[in-house]
Amino acid sequence: MSVLAGMKTNAARDVIDVDGSFLTIEDVTRVISDPTTTIGLTSNALKKMRAHRDFLLASAKKQAIYGVNTGFGPMVTHIIGANDTSELQYNLLRGHAMGVGEPINARFVLSAMTIRLNTLAKGNSATSPELVQVLAQCINHRITAIVPEHGAVGTSGDLVQLAHIALPLIGEGEVMYRGKRQQASAALADAGIQPHTLGPKEGLSLINGTSVMTGIGAVLIPEASRALSLAARTGALAFELVHGFTDVISPTLHSLRPHKAQSRIARALRDLTNTSRLLSQRETSAQKVQIGDKTHVTDILLQEVYSLRCIPQILGPILDTLQHTKNTIAIEINSVTDNPVVDLPGKRFLHGGNFHGDYVAVALDQLKAALVKMTMLSERRTNFFLNKNINRTLSPFLNLKTPGLTMGLQGLQFVATSTTAQSQSLGFPHSLHSISTNGDNQDIVSMGTDAALLTAKVLDNAYIVLAIELVALSQAAALLGVERALSRPAQQLIDEVRAQVPLVVEDRSLTIELESFIKKLRYDPSFDIIW
Image 1 (cartoon, one colour):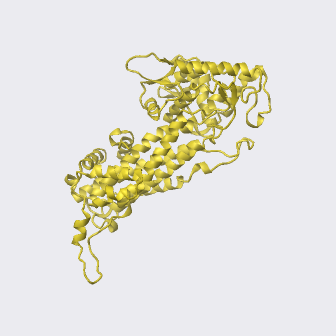
Image 2 (cartoon, one colour):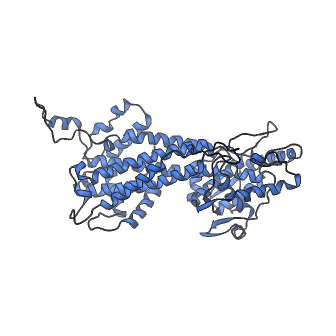
Image 3 (cartoon, helix red, strand yellow):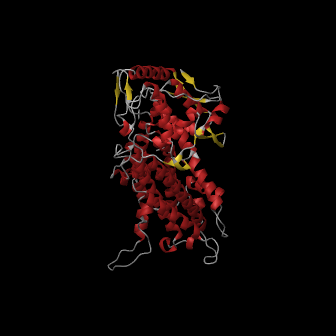
């Protein structure tokens, strides 16, 4: 049984019941991608929140509880009077909503809101059910806070960004609503939502945790998975175009180095190319090489360059990293990352550091590095097909008209090269950039939200470079005249490319075509491979 917050139910609506324990990345994806998906709080969640809330309010009359009747951080020794505990929470939100810079993507904000609601629904943060219901109403009406990019260090949680998310719940700050940037008070009034009046600890519970970095990670996981699927598809197509040797993707070869993800990538390449008429048999080629008493040079190329021969060995670790990051995010979504938290069975308050973002920061740093390597692999294959001195077959820069007079894809390669180089610079683990802050109370921090935003930028870049590689492969297939000999998946992929970016014969700007193509690659599930 669930209680739908803030929306009328009907058969067309998809309601996700939330109780703090079972929210998935797929659920979050539905919320951010489908405006008809709503959040409902289970009756059990409401009951848990009420019980924890009552315990906190009763205990605060008898003992000092951090963040309830004490100051924060280094000011913990300041005891707050009973008449000021509500004002303390308002001051906390207003005093931390200090972010600067461009607003982060509204999808990230909506994801963070959903995850924060799920965390609070566990009850351990001891917020009132009424506060969480206001948050659910904002999610269901798609009222998303304007959250500046700069501010969080990712320890004691995403304090600054979460403060900006929290402000609209009390009728303050700015939001996006119905495609318009406006004051939260106006948006809430339009949606018929009454701003919440904060009680003890509620401000702290709203901003103390990892929901922003986790929310960004939850958005990135399926899009990174699709990028990896595209990398496998482009790799398979490139492998066909060079008449790759079948033993490169042989199950026997990969069983001798039994990393599961490497074998899974090799199997995907076999599945993608099994209807191809272009792949080569090693034995056939080897028999063509003349063996004699004298050393000599043969025209038969017996091994491909690494970007074509080592695709399973390079994409395999990336698949492993993606899966590890997904598991970390899935755990974090259903975790309590507040401080202090209520242990109701034990009738006590637990103080600790579950708000520290290193689990998420490190996982996203690893994913970022993996995406950089995937981008480098794609860029190197693009270079192979554009460089006639390496491929020894194709015209310079895959020119379909008059090399020298027309440019072919020469300019496009600069974009792939510069974009890849930027990602390489962004690849350093941001979680290592700890700087002590908060009066040295937060003396080692995670930088998790910035790590997440940098991973998002690297993923953006990966799609750019993969799109450019696909344009190059489409052009190469035309030059070689082998479209009908390609595997069925390769032919379908070529058709998709050319529907978005037709062959380049006469020089033209590809900017608008590429932007549309990149968007399709990023959000079209038909490109997915189920790992």
